[in-house]
Amino acid sequence: MLEVTNLDCVRGDRRLFSDINLSLEPGTFLQLQGANGSGKTSLLRILCGLLAPARGDVRWQGANIRSLGEEYFTAVTYIGHRNGVKEELTCLENHRINNGLAGVELTKEEALEHLEKMGLPGRENLPARLLSEGQRRRLALSRLLSSSTRLWLLDEVLTSLDRAAVTLITSVIEAHLKSGGLAVVATHQELNLAAGSFERLQLTS
Amino acid sequence: MLTMFRWIVVRDLTLAWRRRADVLSTLFFFVIVVSLFPLGIGPESQLLRSIAPGVVWVAALLASMLSLSRVFENDYHDGTLEQMLLTPQPLLLVVLGKVLAQWLVSEVPLAVVAPLLGVQFDLEPRTLWILFLSLLIGTPVLSLIGSIGAALTLGLRGGGVLIAVLILPLYVPVLIFGAGAVDASIMSGNIQANMLLLAAFFLLALVFAPWATSAALRISLE
Image (cartoon, rainbow over all chains, first blue to last red; front, side, top):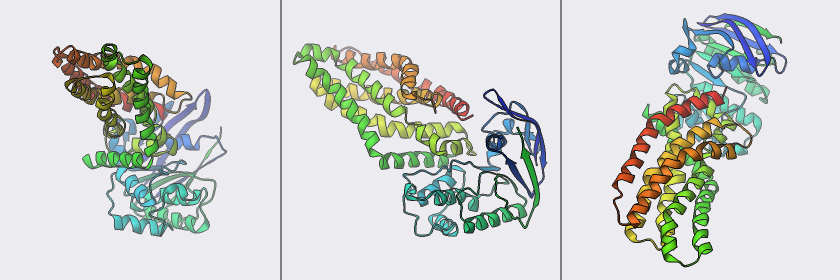
């Protein structure tokens, strides 16, 4: 499904990684590991098409993602380490707008249900600037609940989440893998997944 | 496709409402700059009348510079801009939505208060009306062209000054024909040519600017 061939990444005058080859089938969970600055975020940004690689190709279902354009984005959900949460908007507005931008129309009831599931009940009308770091992360990740995309690219997904939230996200990712999705996740923590095939990529500079 | 456009516009208008101070500061900047001229020059109505079109238009350019440097800045810092680049819709729509919201919030108020300010320059009612119209047609061009500069200077230190240096020269044709229309109306001449040229600039910018802005955004976010 997702194939990566001879991928090189150069940022500034530093070569972050070179010759990365991957071939991921549906139901695969790929954990990216590596020291700080080893290029985990850059690799994820290349995979979602925000960053152009110095060399190499990323192919989705056989087609280069550069030539797929917007069509590729219907298959991808990327959540970066910046949460994409607007401080001035309430949790409910943030959640509905984030979904709207990803092409998913949510009714108010559905959005409230998601927020409750993500452990943010009673905070739907609170401006996001009053949330703690972990709660913001939860709010950003609540997009995964309504996402119907096949490929999830998650950067430092478990940072500042408590144990309950980690369990919740793990189960959401498991359900995603079971339904034939792929997930590429950069994280230092171990996820104990009960479903899908687990792969690991160690980035060394 | 249109729902996506609507989400962007509604989102940006809501954000502007929550951050009213930003919007109002631009408007007050415009009001104060324009009002300083009659105070500085004194009550020479002939002189005031002849400088009015240029003064109001230059102040509008500067005021729109202030608000334009913020179009993409906040979204860039909190990560919402990269999400917008990853939407399954053409990026052009996102850009058009954001520019439309910026124009409604920051530029339309300038056009609305301009006739009031024009009274200080002893302009006639007909000229005030032309001033309003010329700003209404001309300011969308400022928003569209300015969005290119805002996208190019995204994330740079001192971006505010840089955007002015990049974009103000491109505003010159709009300034010439916008102020020209008001001038012509003072001389009771024909305003049609100036207005049509402004409208032509608008259409041209509508076609090319969103495309350039999209490309600049992709480069800035790499």
